[in-house]
Length: 268
Image (cartoon, helix red, strand yellow):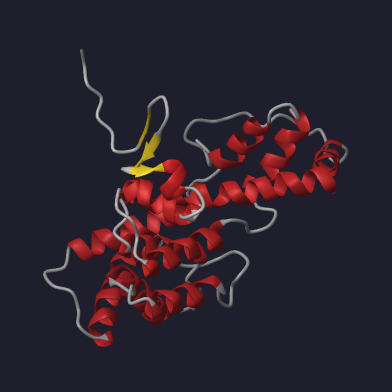
């Protein structure tokens, strides 16, 4: 018979184990959900400092107002109130390169830069030099720097300095955060304008410094946003706005002449 090994959950007639712990006796009531999520992903229990930084990331990404993910969750629930899971899934499926996915994109980008260095800088000037070359390379390649800029917080994302402060307090301000902070300092020299380091990006840097798998960084952003979307649905139940959003589009659209697709044209 085949054997399927796992260190995660297992059950017997009288006992459930999780990560080698008795679920009922050792985990329930003793381990916070954020701590458990970290533990499940790494199969090691986080330190107190790691748990604090990780949970700060989850809080930072939980909700950010009427984003597309929130709107589509509310609209899907309006269309299918019998499918809470469908409404939540619809919102989570919108976690891509513009919303939520920036967490993964920034973590990967910073990691790629760091792995290309012969040695890590030892002071702020060294980090600034690396960051300056990084921004110049992106500019030359006509590529954006992930995590740089925000459509609302144009003068600074309040989540960014707070998460950096927490990481410093816990001794977890590692190379990804140091490089990200340096990018924030030097990019105006290259771009000719000052852009904020956004919250999703700093979360990606912090998660990478925690040693979490880069392939799962977007998953942690989605974990956080799930809580926010549940909150959106809870508010929709009490103070519905989805029907107003739908009617705003339905009653204000207008017919126009067809605009045929032309291969090779502006959108071809």
